[in-house]
Image (cartoon, rainbow, N blue to C red; front, side):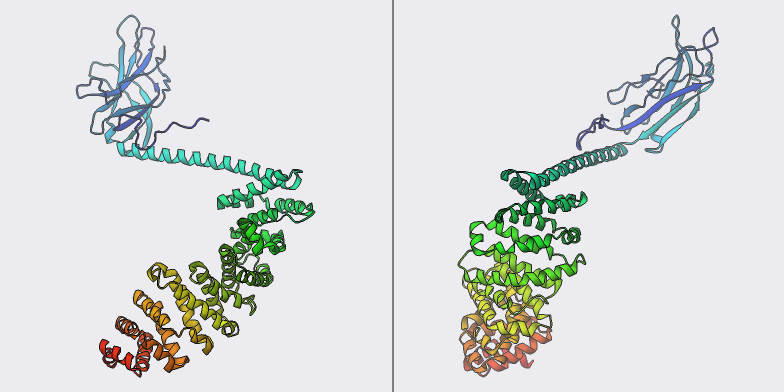
Length: 568
């Protein structure tokens, strides 16, 4: 079946204006005009002017003529639908005249009907029998004709054209989608057969690579694998190929893990992946993730980790117990990896980010039960080695956030507080001077709450790390730049008060005094902004009362009118 030819938007396939669509079906009981008691009827139909003359203009469709039905008083003309175009502001009558054809004399008039299209209901199809009328009292006519017709205004035509184009585009898309699905099904079958049965290394390796690239190209491709139930045959082919290796083929294992990782991006696939033991296959090959292999093949190393990032990325009920079991097995492996990566001088940022992001997802979706005191120090050390890295710091902050809201908070966080504080201090210092804090909002939002957390949960020794004029200057600068962010402001005030409350107060005050010219004005302005925020006001007042003991700080407090403000 051929598709209809439809004009594109902005192009008109008609002269414009309105339409009147007519079909003449048949007649009955027509008047006999010939001497043999019959007639040879035909129809002429089109628009007429006020004088009854046929309208013949460029913007109006010319009158049409039907076939002649010989010797018949009940003719069946069965014309096709004829579209008559006319200007929207034209209010002329549409006439159908019936004539008897004569070969030796003039044709005889047999009657007419007239319709005013613009008075009809727009877009409604009509059909019926209509009695033929004479032109004048001298005409002898009889009978009826059956016609169907429809009037369409210009607005209706435009709307119909848009609908037709939309339906056509939809049909084209459906056909294209069907072709793509057919092609995809053929390709997947070919790839799986090559992986399982091909004797040539380049063929089964290329098939695996093509399969991965196809999955990575579009998430909808993953859904096709599920729709056609290819996972079982794929795992069978992969297992068969793996058993044929005399020694491990790490590249092949990496590509397969990459495919499984892409499949796991669809939450609907998780149950099937665990049923087919896909996680076991991936876990057996995580041993190949090492700094040395990362140096050799960065992409393959990341593919080996991809499944875990996607396995844990959804918190739904799909295979929840299996996910928790896998997480418990995976955390010790991650711990060893982070230990190696923290010690090795290798630019493995992406690998670290994959691991720490996976741990953050596990903590968020499965809880922190699988985390232990062995891995937390390695996570904290990332802030030392990768100080100032926005993405790594953000993921580490997420992990500590989830730990802090768990029963294991004190057991896991207190022992690592000194190391974490060193990393946090390095991160803060790495961004000043240099890149302004305005350009690192995400980093500030991750780091400052962590500093506040460890200020209060850490050991007194860990607080000593912060006792430097530069640290307090930077904290005040952050408070100034983010004065409209209540969360950041509250945390900075909490850090300052925590250092004074939990540390050596006299020592801390003497350090702050060295940068009091910046700290005091910023804190004073902040208390004015958040005069209705009870916690910020109370903590700030306690800070000012403590700083008042130092002569330098008191001078700055008097200069800013801070003490009078507190009294008010």
